[in-house]
Length: 498
Ligand code: ADP
Image (cartoon, rainbow, N blue to C red; front, side, top):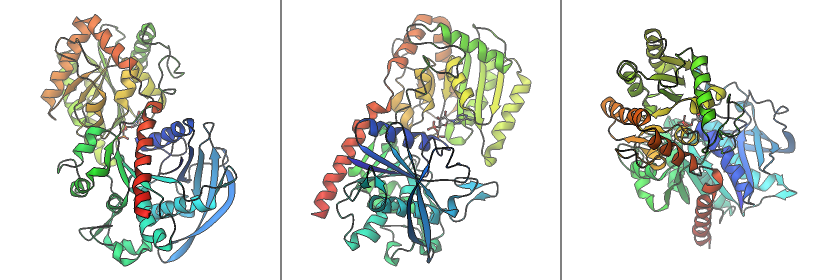
């Protein structure tokens, strides 16, 4: 199959979170299965085209937007896996941030990502891949609201001209909270016929909602875990689009993300002070001692160390974890390390963590900022991993932690519910600890079960670690599920175009 992945982030070229990781890794895994894979994403200002090995394809295209034409140029990087990464160049992307900068979110994001969608569709006709353009026998796989215009553009701008009539599109929702919401008047900038600003397309109570437009017009919709696929059809999880998703539930599928099993492998991870595997966890003890030393905590194998990595954000349950710190330290003699980045509106979390650092200098450390190395060291050096999310479309860190023999303590939502098997009361089964109600008491109860198992039943704890480390979380195991979706989309579109 020929697959065109359309995303605002594709690692290693651009990444602010899981979206970039997923698109980069899915593209590589599809290529390893023998598919022809092209990704289309912008080249943002901070990405040095020469440094990432990009060549100019020599292809440009003039695209409509805001009543004028915009010339876009295609650069290309061919990865070792054979993926053709097209990076599109336009002055609107040549800025310091991906979605915004120190002055806030960019005001023209609707136009920027409409150019991305149009450039991705045009690429199939214009950009040679292994000698000739892909043509129309492709599957467009768009991601989140930034890619969501692709199916709508196909329907509104191309099929009426008899182009891409049987070309299917798939839309993946990575986080429904972000929908591409803009004032209704900005619809005019998209250069679409006025009838597409309607409730069955891009209008959401007089506003412009790009994701909604995509959801109405994709052949298949996926999201990043089966449980999240169910949650987003409810009023609580649907962020106002639950009705749309219920109306399209026959084409909605949840597929749990994979992880990059080469980068996240404790047996070979170059960022760790010692390596280990499921047969011999000696190296993990070295990692714990090194982490305690680095953090300035008491270096003591008998003191449990609980780790957490990720955005400091109400979505991630950061508040529940922080409120549990005094109990963890004073009642459980546990150590806590949090690596995180707080957006401006949630700086209060950072301040509270700093207060606890001062109050418990031998037990609590907050590493503020973004660091791949520290993330790996926490996954390896901690005894337990805390992820008490309010909602979690998939989540990657719980999978990393299980692979690193660091059982997670998670709330039973979204991808956490789908990836962590609950340990029973006697620790005789499972890969981690799971609680249900979003409440500090329930988190502490789960932490208590986990800490008791760690302290009092080392054999059972070792078995829980082993079960988590044995799971195949790789993308190669996930790809067949996407292939089935692409086939379904092709079959449906073939019927529609016939
Ligand atoms: P999100 O909702 O942010 O996408 P995910 O768990 O799906 O959450 O993915 C986040 C990714 O970003 C993971 O690979 C995680 O390790 C990484 N990450 C998040 N915050 C940090 C940080 N402060 N330092 C290093 N890596 C981080």
